[in-house]
Image (cartoon, rainbow, N blue to C red):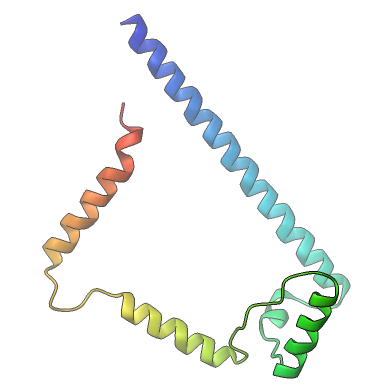
Length: 124
């Protein structure tokens, strides 16, 4: 009984440590978001405005040349049109939906199985 109690206490200590680390990561992310917002505000911008920026191929090439000159990796190619990005997101979402011919019970059973496997390490 005493050994089981020690095991439970050790398990709870690991959980507390994981929670503390997670809270630390969340706090770091919040600080970075606030820092980014302050930097954007100092430039007279908002996140929404930055999301709506459209760059030409020439601008992307100029940025990649500057990054290369500074010894940094070039930016990956991306869609320059927000509408095109939205269409791609919409189509990827639709393609991720289960097909209508799949049995809902089979899908539910598969999800339950995966959830059970994921929760196995947390069982006492």
